[in-house]
Length: 154
Picture (cartoon, rainbow, N blue to C red):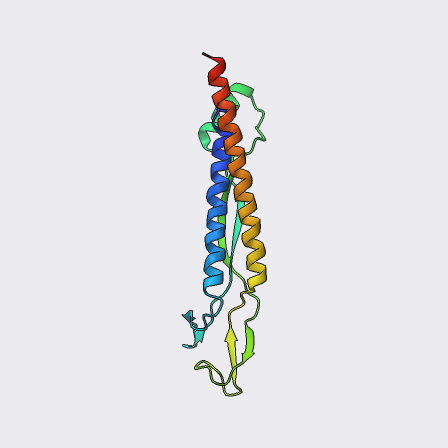
């Protein structure tokens, strides 16, 4: 394990949480978009909410080789960070809103609206923000420890 391992792990989490915040921002920006894309029937379809999926980042081959050479056959269980595995669309049905004056209203006067719930998006945004702040704190603690180690070496 290198001395920068904790910083690299926190940096991967910062990157992943930043992307999560970008996706939440995109969802909020498109909360009223009724014409996001054309479906296979040639009709406009509202914006679908997107969600970010995380997974543990795989260790590079070099790390596995070093662990095998140093520790024998034992595999290391140390974490190596997180990465975004996919950005998925939420398949919940669209909301139907009665608005006969809307240009996309059907014959009954209903408009399909995106499946974005602003309250749910705000909860996701707060969660991503808190995780981002926690990782910044971890980076600062690691940096402080490294600086103290350098002072000891003087």
